[in-house]
Image 1 (tube, rainbow, N blue to C red):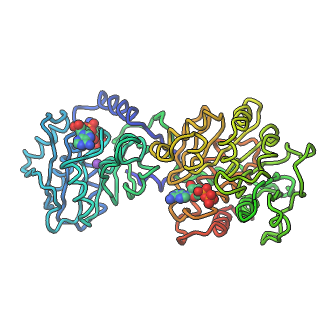
Image 2 (cartoon, rainbow, N blue to C red):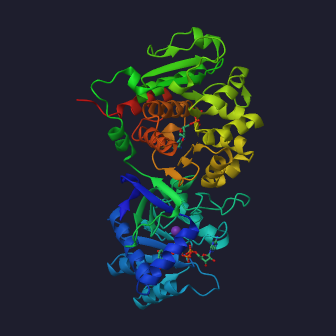
Image 3 (cartoon, rainbow, N blue to C red):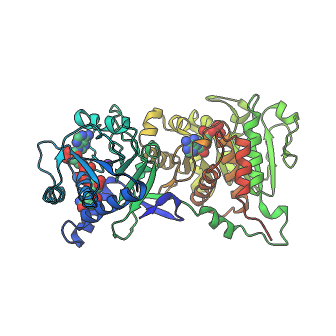
Length: 511
Ligand SMILES: NC(=O)C1=CN([C@@H]2O[C@H](COP(=O)(O)OP(=O)(O)OC[C@H]3O[C@@H](n4cnc5c(N)ncnc54)[C@H](O)[C@@H]3O)[C@@H](O)[C@H]2O)[C@@H](O)CC1
Ligand SMILES: Nc1ncnc2c1ncn2[C@@H]1O[C@H](COP(=O)(O)OP(=O)(O)O)[C@@H](O)[C@H]1O
Ligand SMILES: [K+]
């Protein structure tokens, strides 16, 4: 059993369908009931580890195999002499065979199984085994009552496989975007069984799941087809890649050009440029869209001002990694200063990070969308870094639809525009044509402040300038992981300029 986000590595994620296929294959290879017996034992062990002093435990079981896992755990915990109260919510349908076995062995062992919808007096731990992978609709009736009672109890909760009510594929509280969100358990711990589910790591998953543990029940990991969770260890790959030779010089580490910073939004472009510099780019240029920024001094004396006036045919595109769009307007009100050079940029720039108002401009221009789509086949590479609203504009979807299935939204956007995408937010989703989707496990709500996205865009370009051949999907994964990691243990709120310093502090030092 591991606490998955604390491990180094990339872990396969499985859709519900993939989980079912893995489960069926594992069941065909194991003796009857073996998986559920192991799952229930793992739940009991984790319960003892996270609540070692608890004497009274309420185990809330549902009508499927998730409930079966809870019943097996109940039998083990009661066998240790703990006061175990079991509520079993089942309809008129017969229990699945494994859960029926768990029910029978629990009652044979003398467990009393009731239907109470309240935590017993003196309860010190709740085990939530109500609903797992089999969630079909938003919980109502007694299920909703039980979830509300669990959440209102103030008692620590360990959820089995998933917090009940959370959808495994999406991290949403209901199976589809149209349905009204249902109740979801708020757990302190979740023990995910057999295979990792993407919904634990993106959308609302992290808020409901608490600390996420994983037990593969002895079934070897295979690629789940649904993507990969990015846990720890990405930065270490970079440090091997980006070794600096003694004889190197500023020309060895590439050049970044940031285009942005319209009137009143100058800070965004400065943050992106400062971030590219901290990431290690050899030279960072700033093409300001506002006269005020052009004229003003900056706290970063290393930045180089690009000349005033339009970009021309002399621009050395091949030498540059571009960040376009940070602070180039207000929402859809983008400065014309960005619209005019954009077609030339889309036709020429070999490495382009398109952020914020660069994305808003594209969402309003079919010509820009066509130019964007043509880039990959022309050997030009592009990384889009939308937050959910920017993604919604590009997709012409409501933002709720983007958030209802973030993996799908990132995949659709990446394939529609034929480029790499980082869909930002809790559990950023990284999608690229022909690549498995990555879900970034690092980061937290300390990043929920203005300008942290500009820092990410600049950092990505700063890394890319130093490693121009790096595949965009890998670059995006590395940048998102690094950005999130810098927020771990940071004071809240984390100001964007300070975030750059935290990210810089994670760079390797040279002897
Ligand atoms: N079969 C096995 O050996 C294993 C099963 N496992 C466990 O089995 C779980 C999956 O089991 P199931 O497929 O039985 O699914 P669940 O136990 O998650 O739930 C399915 C049952 O809940 C009902 N249901 C669905 N949504 C509902 C709602 N909103 N309100 C009320 N009832 C609702 C369904 O009609 C069905 O009866 C996993 O999450 C995991 O906990 C794992 O431990 C791996 C091993
Ligand atoms: N709750 C959160 N958990 C993890 N990451 C977050 C959270 N909130 C914000 N972030 C990250 O912070 C950044 C915010 O970007 P964005 O919304 O574009 O901000 P801005 O436009 O102000 O720079 C993104 O990288 C996003 O993934
Ligand atoms: K559950």
